[in-house]
Length: 285
Image 1 (tube, helix red, strand yellow):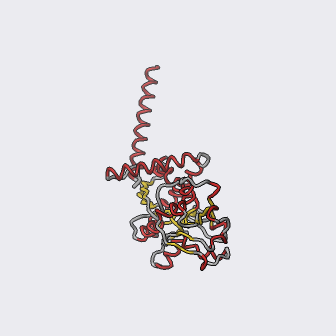
Image 2 (tube, helix red, strand yellow):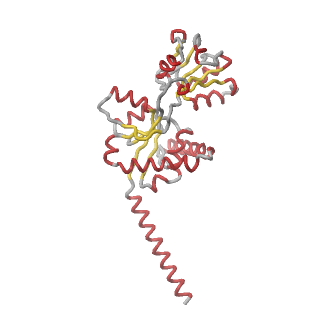
Image 3 (tube, rainbow, N blue to C red):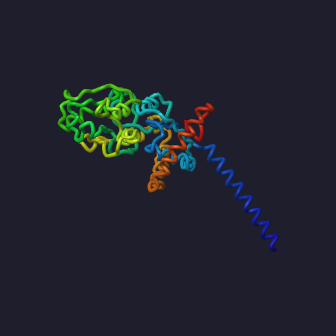
């Protein structure tokens, strides 16, 4: 009797295993491909997307997601060209793009930043402790910088005479180094990345001044998830599914910020290996 029951259990386990294999195979075959563009390199702000990819949340939802790095304008252009389906980018740049290109009805469907990270970063040792102190100073700003695009609003909101501020057009790679070296007195950038770049250039933390524009009169939204009209119309369930997956990352790992950094580091390593081999790794390109 015991042998009979044992045989029955083995048969049942084999049947269950076969059924699970068939289900997984069917799910894999039925997955919806999604090309997703980021607005920059792999940083902490990209963690919700990378966590969802690493943990398999997308696949459980029936999505085969490929995530590519880029820039905020590039992400929008990718959607306009229909070479990508969805993207994480700056809603303010999207508004400008749609104003100049009304034929492209790209929509923001999920807001992630209730205020943008636009900032002006300076140093107390350069004589700057308030926005008004920027008068008579040199402001380094790449012309294509989305934060610099908000400079007129920031200046007006803080009663800054723009004629008394010298604007220097500088490249992104030398922006923070020029501030560290004292070649400029302040720079435009994003609050988190510019601050970190300056801090880890041996500038004392208490010498760094960050004016988050949203806290100084610039009332705007920030980044959001945007989608091409064609993809939204043809695959609305995929759009909803991606939202559900992305929201799981902060919920499950929000109390462990170290995890977010680890996922970003893993993604960058995977990207470097993919570049070296000529092929994408783990859905990352």
